[in-house]
Length: 283
Ligand SMILES: [Zn+2]
Image 1 (cartoon, rainbow, N blue to C red):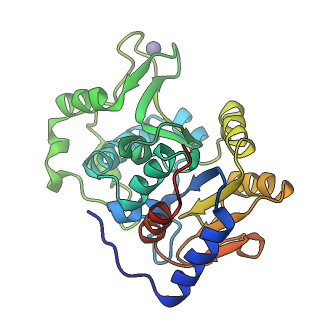
Image 2 (cartoon, rainbow, N blue to C red):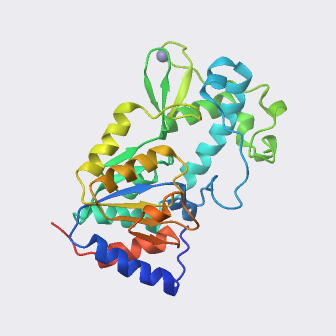
């Protein structure tokens, strides 16, 4: 589902300024939850978003009850992700890369939509919901296969009435009592989605990959992130230190508006598409 509305006058000016700043440059793209809202995935940090109680990694590792609740919610969340389609913004970024303009995309999202849109170099800073791994033996599983197993072990979970969501988007504990938590099919070890939990650090190698992508670029476009996550600010500072142009596209304020060369307050789908249509290919 893609909803593209017309850009207002201020955004059109912003796009012209951005085109001037980016002209002839190889561009690194950094994305946050805002690029996926047009795919129907809620931005928990956006305006009017429901408050949530994020699962910390300590809690996940320490408590059977927490893990059961987590897996029920995570399974339902995964089904919503799996049903979502890349939108015009994801496709524009893939197109910018195919045309030699974008060097790749660094994302804070775990929804896998950049990969599905055809982006080739994708640095998933916070991991991805597409993969699950065993915390004991390291075996990696495809989430789709695991979802089949979860539904086979818990047939009731496929019936929406059985899984009422609480006001914070959490699943009510009484509904998770009988849930069979999936384990590693190799060693029966504890499984964990390949995502960075609240309170966990981004793996150092992953951040280095993102730094290298910015290092190998001549401009940075940040789309759909209010930059409350420090990793985003650190990447922005890497670009600023080299005096690279930085374009921020986001609905609403970000923590770094004053540090951007151009800030466009508008939807990412519309703006990224406008940029992809206007920037000449570099092949
Ligand atoms: Zn294992």
